[in-house]
Length: 203
Length: 203
Image (cartoon, rainbow over all chains, first blue to last red; front, top):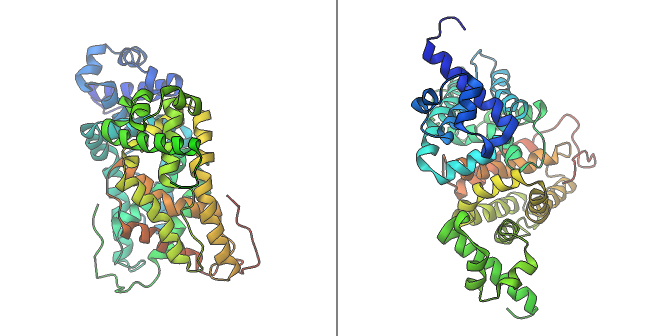
């Protein structure tokens, strides 16, 4: 990949190796040594960047989900479906979905790790979706008096719910249902409707 | 508790002791022996009913969530909010919320345990909500052409999402938002609207 520094190339190789190995051996059996071997780097190069396996896996998940899920082309439904489909693709099409339950348990047990995950993966992704929704408010396409945090949760929660409890598979129709249900609500006239009244909490 | 057999009293004491100890020492440090001591029963009485800590915790969570969350009084919004509030109360007001992330990791690692959780806790609760929604379809209050699985997910997923990622707290307004968003969609005229057309997948 042209233009990347040596450090960025090492980071990318280590994160890719982490996702690959998660798919092959699972979270519990994953070791920093095996990641270093797979990435073709020395163990100290891994430990210099990530103090523990948990930190490494958080960054691998953030990298796998991608930092900019939701575009803002002006077609609100299309942009939201594109954003949610990055979650579907990452969770159903890579080892990330299988590692998520173990990661969630680690996050709950380690507030510092949870903060890192929220800062690196969770909130940056939500910020892109929030920006797309605010553009649609500014265009007058959806009402302005909604709870941004709730709408962001409602868009993504059903996907994570299925991955974490395993009762049903992910699919493109599910992503579209999430978006259409939320949009049905946002396109209603609210109690104080109007594109200039911005009560939404920013993410 | 009058009317319960000795076995039911032991079961109840063991499940209550499990939830109490989960709150005090957490999932990892919980032992079957400590549960037996707290419940005032012999260890074999616990092992006779639950082959492992994981099995015991699944049943304690099922017991804590309760088997009949959603009533069917004829007031759809009220009934759905009551149902969702049983999740809020259990996850925010008891140790169950703190133990859920570890449980989710165990479920993903053990398909037999996951089956037990889905059968004992997940699906029985969803069945009560599905029945309440079907009554509302029969009364002509909501459209019939919806995906029952998706609606059941959309009602509960935002709550579990917040507990599992820890980014925001649970609340009654959140439960009401879940219900109102879903109802806004179910009260729209669908492409093939009408209370006699039942395309919803049963849970």
